Length: 222
Picture 1 (cartoon, one colour):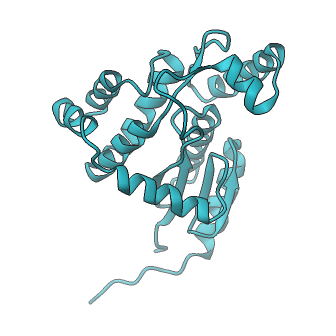
Picture 2 (cartoon, helix red, strand yellow):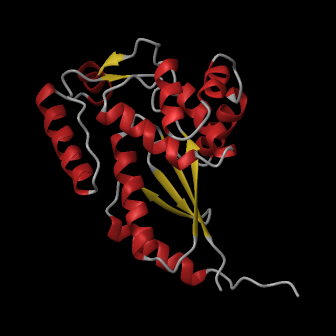
């Protein structure tokens, strides 16, 4: 029996392509049901210096990418279609949307990993921001989302009121930046095979099968 493959999913909770990438990856894993895989969610902040009040999406897109309102609307429409094809609703209208700081969300995700609820929290954070148009830097919102993901709300509130896991998140972010990751999603299979962007399930499936076939057989101790 082959060893499980490891998949590091480097992403931010306010990145729409990360939604598409994760759902595409999970669909690919469903198709290759005979391959064991472990997804490890890794932190990345697209806007680590974003102030608490955030910034209007239209202004952010113009400043960072030079996008006009029309270009932003076209791109978001395409992203919505890609997400909808994977069963996810992006309701955030570009003309009303805001971009926020996500550091506290990553601290919460780090804790969720220790509690075995990281995937559930990741999906709940995506839904909160993109579907329900909530602020992922608001600590009350984050506590609500944590509870929805099966975590203890009071424990989440206490964590967010402290600086717990701040060092760990910054350290992990630094690791991936030193490895050349400067955009997300970045999906690294078995620590050596990189897939960038919100790719379709077919591409992920091909990569998973290839890496699984190259894995050594697991040994069982007598």
